Length: 444
Image (cartoon, rainbow, N blue to C red; front, side):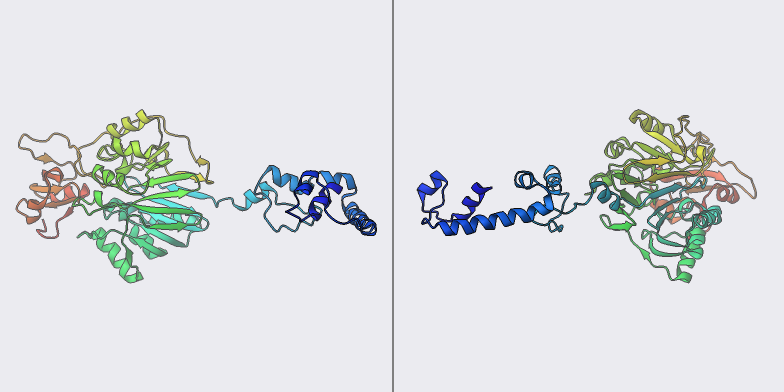
């Protein structure tokens, strides 16, 4: 201790002899030394009253400071420690508890051959689609059972009936903060029903902008699609990447390979722990290049039991299986739910182990895909539709993307891409029963 005090007292930088010998450069004045010695004794006596051991206080760091030295940054500056080392730092475990994320829940509702997903976090909610027209009341009841009386976000991926059919009921029964829709409009009863409720409730749609980010409790979601409008509607689906702590979730609506490839060139990395299979597990979606970028650990497929399009398709299931992902599907397991704490995921059921692909039945039902293969028809290239026959069967041209049917001489047929064109011989009632809607121009 005496050596330290000698070094502090000497400020003569130009004294080389002092630097070498370590002594005090001053005149010999014994009475000053005695006063200084008494002062030092008083100072040591004061510290001894706090530490209880003068020698230990002189050579050993105080407990709180020693802990801080071992774990830098735990004790913030200005924590109230006095010159003798007293004071308590914040316990690391207590600090971690304060930063715990609010729990996030994702409900993949069983709405048959359609899509509906509810996301909640920190008392806020996001609803993605609402199934077809017959599912509106079911979705309403489910939301009410979850204690939801206000939806912060409603997201309509695209205006197909199996996605927005129940939205009119949802918007009528629940107020919402932000309604996301694409700019695409449809001349269908389903779309008109939604538009009428929007007008009645004063809802304004918000167009998706790729890169825009929104908060949902402690989670955030980023718009990752669409990049451009597409004639079929499927490739104009709103796609989002949801992040909660270390966990990520990807939703792409009915986006097919074309939009999937567009997303690959965006600024947002698409890697996700959970991927909701695009287009109900159709072979037109979840292309290999897209899956290689996403690298999901889990895939959720929303489709109806024995649906007419055979969702999920064998091609998609084979790609998922080759990647070693775990599959959940609403046609086998009903409503699927996953909970995130920001690090771990907890599911309400075990993964499916059937790897059973669907079997197409030849008709076109809600949720059908554009460009999908159909069962072989007559040699002239037309296809006979199955269903309840009423009236006279006629030749119609169907757009398997927009799911409208037309007279062969309709001007819309000339603008239709060949991959979406399907020539059928059927009655008007059969086509409507299979999920098609009559063209608003030629009015078949």
